[in-house]
Amino acid sequence: MNRDNISLPQLLRQIELYFDCSLTDAEESELRNLLASTAHRHPSIDEARAVMGFRRRESPSAGRKADVRKLWLPVTGVAAAVAAVVSLATVFLYSPGLHTVDSTCIAYINGEVVTDEEAVMRQLTSDMREFGDCAVDVHKDFYDELEEAFPVIDDYESENLLIEN
Image (cartoon, one colour):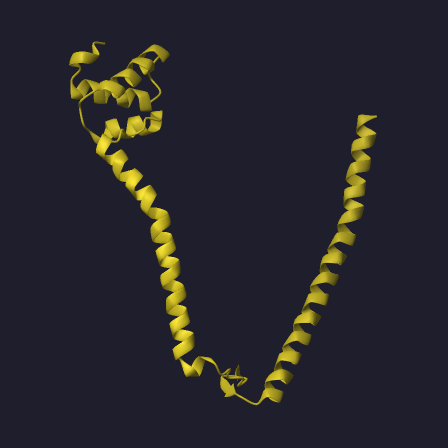
């Protein structure tokens, strides 16, 4: 196949054959060379290049832009950090409400707001006890399941040893 004057439909047909796994190794190599050097533009060509591992070439000016971005990245990072520190310092220094800690205990129990600390702690203790009891039950159920499985596993392993001998 002459790669200098291949038409777009011919190239697209070769790409279609490539995706159908219908090309020989030599034809696939030729297609790879065609894709590397063709001036044709088409989404199928881009897709074939991507699948074959081609990378898009950047223009020389794009490389310089990337270099400039690499230089500015640390500067912008430091500037952002300084701005964050200054903002937080300003908020904490000039906001009198942030220096006091509100220690009001609030819970929602049965859809009602409860602010009595003792009632909230009783509910929390009750919930934690119930959670612990459920964890013990799950642990026991799991242990019982394992106890039932061990004899089955032992029987299976014993049968395999008898068959092999």
